[in-house]
Image 1 (cartoon, rainbow, N blue to C red):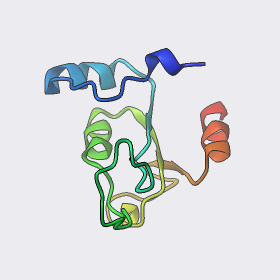
Image 2 (cartoon, rainbow, N blue to C red):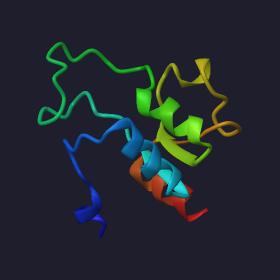
Image 3 (cartoon, helix red, strand yellow):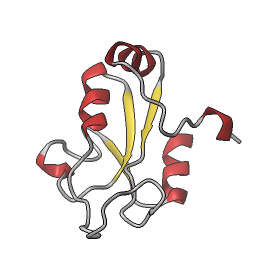
Image 4 (cartoon, rainbow, N blue to C red):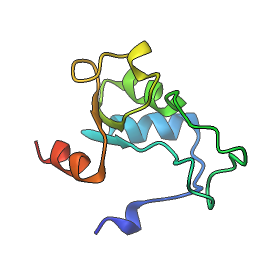
Length: 98
């Protein structure tokens, strides 16, 4: 339904990125999958555990962020208190509805 609003490989300046984040009510932060060969260059298939830089950028704006679970996430934020997380596409959809 929102396919035309998803821009892959679209670089934005830091100013434009901040403007974009601040202009939303909910930011959905989906980390790149280690199994996605089209956008992932992780040829060693090392499992990802750390949050992406976007997570910290979004948090700095104070916008509500919904992100997939990463192993190192509790080292930076308290899930369910400081940041909302999901484990599956179905759970992500339910979080957005709430």
